[in-house]
Image (cartoon, rainbow, N blue to C red; front, top):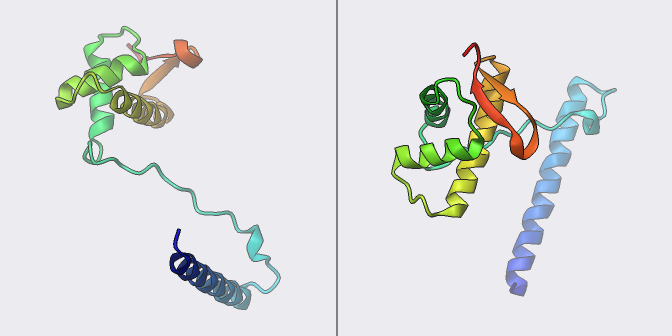
Length: 132
């Protein structure tokens, strides 16, 4: 990395540290006894990919489970169906792994709402619609 680039990044880091000091000072005006280090960081959310519109992946996951008619599916099976539904390249292993991971994240959120059930753990884990 060029020396000029490193110097610019160090200046930006110094500015961000100064900004943080000012924020800590402002927080101290409202709660003087509270340590700013005790504040938990804001939760980060999975970034939506350019492959799916808002809510589209959850809809596709649920459609795959409905099409299974009560038969438990693996996340890999669902990823294959989603790839076919979207018309993506079925031979792209990296894309399949990414969709599988996103589908798993989506399934966990849907499970919290009680719409799907998880069967098993690890590689043998399967999913099905609840009450089917």
